[in-house]
Length: 374
Ligand SMILES: [Zn+2]
Image (cartoon, rainbow, N blue to C red; front, side):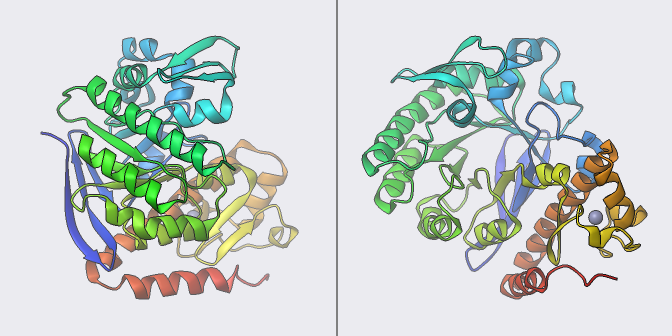
């Protein structure tokens, strides 16, 4: 059985469908929790699955440095290593080399850099990135690209985009023929429509199993991001999945789905869980706040997660203030549950043709704000 995308319904530009892989189906629009170092922090993989996640994201940059791609392969691959038998998407490493590594040197061939962990020297090229992602056992492999740091001039954005297109071609050749595994191209071009369309055209000519919109959520703001998505999705094939990388807040995700995005990933729900930030139907709350100290109610009475089913705000507040590990576990679970719940609701709304109504209710709930203190 191979990799395929079955588009089942559309409502406006929003779409719902299923990506079929040998490791299981991915219902779209899909939110992918981030398992940076072969773990979604503070969560057992079976708990991540319980929230409704069909696929996780792994970071090539982190895993190549520790434990190392060859070691991972010898240990049976990333799925077995972390006990997640379902689909995994890995990024190419390019973005994190740019944001985390020291002493980078970029050439036509690739990037050399020093590890942020121990200072050791490494090289990433399109060919090596494909090799590492194959060693990890990734189901959805991302092309090696360069995401320029912002702010950048138009010339710099254009140069990085054209280099990324040459690297996309090399990635495709290096990926080869791997039935059941997919390779996604990554559109670049900043917030300039001509560059985005040039990038999309170059990628479609090479031909990929899916297409990502890269280089967004890097500080351009929601309005500029939506502006790009308004035309970017139209330049990509209708019958293949579209992935918006590194996004985002709940309202970013809803706006992206509305514009035709099928897949997203972000550290926000898990990272926020560790810092006491909680997402609910009524916007965001901070569990650290003293107003929760005597509050016997759950975070969200409609939520099915263990944090809401079994514990009060007062207890969660106490755990956080006491810096207890259970605080990170419960709040991460809740936030991931909230994200998966809105994805599930959006899939249903698109299938029923009432996405606009759902979106209106979503925004009304967020605008209402947290329930009044007791
Ligand atoms: Zn909950």
